[in-house]
Length: 347
Image (cartoon, rainbow, N blue to C red; front, side):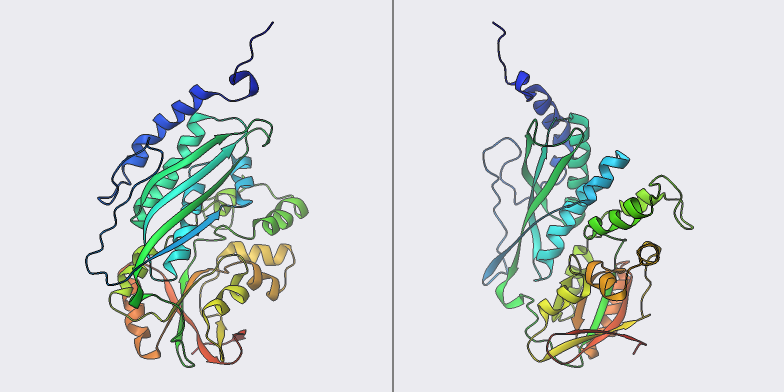
């Protein structure tokens, strides 16, 4: 009788151990002084520095990369989507003024390939370093028969901390405040079901073909990772009172901006006041997609918006430029019922 093993069921334990060994060097670079123990324990231990904190508040967020992963599979490129996973989580908790402390990832696949898994985690680790947080652990799950060959899913979880009296909630936003938009790097990590529907299914475009005037192919442009906004925002928080922050992800402008607006306020956004990357013009043309779909699905070149008083907007812009963060004053807060109005013109 043939002996049954775990490997015969589709789980390669040795490959799993090898993937961990390949990941260790990248993960170790993210360790901060707050981390009490490295990889290998059953739980990650972090002792945050509470000096200067009166009422520390933990802020957490979780997210995945979504169907952008389909493009990574098609391009067989896995070194960028780790940053997408980190950015989608840390940018969310940043909206409340929280400095990210640590991050955990979840990678699940049908058949584990150690080098591929290591490339994914290396991207996560690099993004964690940029965000100033530690990659304290994660889970790599081999699930034969659950995913198609060569495919995987990736999600993450971030925890940050902020003093309660420095929480950013949007409650102090009033009519007349300035809305500043921070540049995105492209489509980021939402709307890719529509991207694939328009560009790949409808138009049959080649991901390896050149795109616009850049040296990137269409696939490389689409795989450009989500921007990390931790450094410029944390620098600004020390010097300018930020009233509100909104991460422009799924739901675009119409869903995300109202999340920070108090009752009886609204947002007017000035079309033409910032640079819209070529990828969005391509999607609009090939759809064709109307304005409501474009601004209700994609970030349209604005990955994060912040609200400051009109008196502070010039100082805010100077600080962003000093941190090499491209940004524009793209609108203002008005009276209303949390609606977002897009109009031609600028201040």
